[in-house]
Length: 320
Image (cartoon, helix red, strand yellow):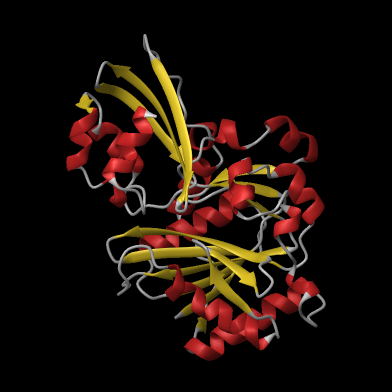
């Protein structure tokens, strides 16, 4: 395994390095990195619906989109991000348990006991969240990454993250702040740099990892340009039709929202957004369902695109 710590705090660059390594690494890579104040949305989320740009602009907060699914998260310099890149994974599908084990073990050495809870969170025994994670898979190549709240500004996080009420209701809490806790409150580690070093030492020891320097490539430059572009962050285009319908529902596996142009029982076009996970790109599903009768969806494996969702549930959502 290779081990890398990035010293930059620009989210567009850090996400570019991560994606470059995901595309090119021949060995497993474990990476630690931090972003300055940033809201990072999942690949399937509608940026216009997820954030208030005026608030982000007011406080100088970056907005970035990642290549993994899931919901919006907040990064600052009190948060440490980790990435686990496996170019030849033997796991099947989306597997959070396998990739969070090293993090759970590392945290335990610091006296912080957490467990994988729900879809993709690491929580204390009292149910408070210190980490959320997401995955992207192409063939056997897997990118698993997550947040580790060490000393983040939880009050500010509540200002810029406003998850829908159904999500908070499912967690039996009234706000983001009441749902999370910082590692510094649970451990004797005093600084984020000491925390990074503790994680680094544990991973290097456990995996006999080799420390490497950040890669340099024109491909990283191109990914940086894409990550920082308006078209990447706001790809949504208005749908024009004589009839438009928007339906949404939160399931155990995440929120799914559909904006459809329908003619009788036929889907003319649609846009799928939400904080769900999936192995295949929903853009492929969107194209597949153009000019398709609603009932014909029963012959399509929806779960490959929206993990946990059946074709019947997808049809029922359209008809709701």
